Amino acid sequence: MGFVTLLLLLTVFTGCRTSPAPPAPSPRPGSTLGAVVVVDMIPASLSGEENQDSEPFLSVHPTDPRKMAASAFTPNPEGTASGFAPVFVSEDDGNTWSLRNIVPSAGPVGTGDITHASTGGTAAALYAGILRIPGNLLLNELRTLDFASSGAMSVQASRSQIDQPFVQAARIGLNDRVYVGSNDFGAAPRTATLDVSLDGGTTWKSVRVEPRDTAGQDGPSVRPTVARDGTVYAAYFGWRSFDGNVATSDVVVVRDDSAANTFQALVGSDGLPGRLVAQGVSIPWSNGPTLGQERIGSTLSIAVDPNNSSTVYVAWGDRVGTDIYTIHVRRSTDRGISWSADLRVIANATNAALAIANNGTVGLLYQRVDGSGSGSRWETRLEQTRDAFTTTQNAVLASVPADTPAIQFLPYIGDYNYLLAVGDEFRGVFSANNTPDLANFPQGVKYQRRINATSKTLEDASGQSVASSIDPFYFSIPVVR
Image (cartoon, rainbow, N blue to C red):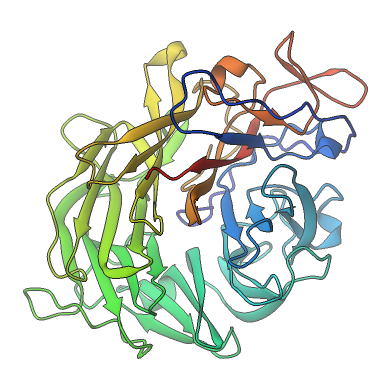
């Protein structure tokens, strides 16, 4: 799950209950962002569950945005014997969610890492990359032509010793192009890799994008992004040394312009492919709880302006001074050749996710720890900017206790979350403590699962109290104009 799939399962609970869902909230007074929607995605039928549904991801059908697929470390309610893990599906703009058990994996938390992307056309095609369970870091690259159906996803390609597959896809012309970034230990010591299919997953090519010496491997995160004109960027961590606790790393961006799949359009000052956005940054590597019960060392995001592929933003996490983990955001306006200094710096934060809307507004989703000890809280924030973070408009989507519930496994809330620009909205997902205290959700929140708003507790179908846990939350928020 993230850095070399770490299943430190302490407890896993499953449940299957039915219950009514409370009505959707109205926008909170004083909000300047219009109708913000936040939804706990656990269906009413699973009101009794107490799972740690961490590391969520989201796909939106490009031509029918009412249809969305999402995922998390969610077990199949029918158990592992079925051989399949679920995805969440919404067909009503995210107001309600249900499960489809279509992912070929049989782990106690569904799959290892899972990301996915939907493409246009009449069918709700979905491409996914998973670490299949059981398996030895077993990558499966999957496809379904209709993610809302109950038909199983088909395996298009597979190999072992892969970490953190990250999928992006787009319909360019008449074909679906699929890009899966991963840390491929089979390519050590230069492990940053992109699997590329230009024909909807029928054939694949693995492109090794790291040309420089490494500390035996690159970092886990390899993140592609696709513009509408077919330009593809990818960011990765080039680990140059590692002392067992801290990786000294470059933040590298590569680019491909014409589906040549070489990703050599950007060249560094050393004459090798890839521009160095930042050099020699210190990335703390912690596979144990470090920041609000979460591990750190993998935060990386990249987004290209969909209508102007010259403009691209990168966000990553590293260590600055005595801070535990700091997010940085930089921009290029010349197709990745030159890069700004830091436009935004956020201390004690992780899980940065960038997206750029059609009008050029940039969205930055992240989660940060505020306070310390028993008073610490995970804040999930979305910042929007029209002027490269000179000014921002901010929304706190959640502010929940960071010390409860107790960790079941790592990642606690996830090595990443996700953000998309869809028309005049930003849509995204995050995981957080699910205690139904409306004070924890400043923009309001809707629960599908049964709650008692008076006692601020979760309930099963019989009305018995259920312990708080980690749930995935969907949100949508109007794009600033």
